[in-house]
Image 1 (cartoon, one colour):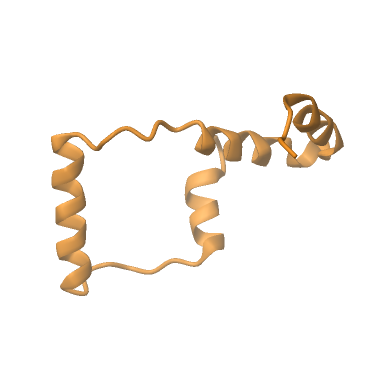
Image 2: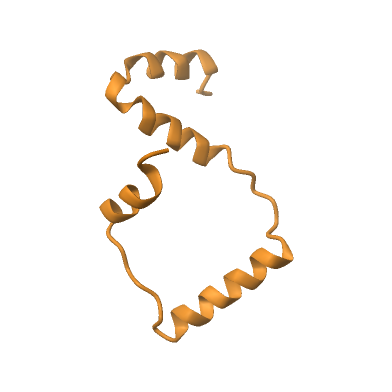
Length: 73
């Protein structure tokens, strides 16, 4: 069965008001274009991979990432 926009609208109506900002953030993530990376983006990706391979990266919990990237938007 295919998902219809009307079904999604019904689900949205069930989301509590205090969760609406989270819902908007998730929807924004889903609307990000899946274009090929630019030359600059490829350069940054390669640099990040080198840092990872050299153990120069940090790890974060999901709560830390949410706090840094999803709050105060």
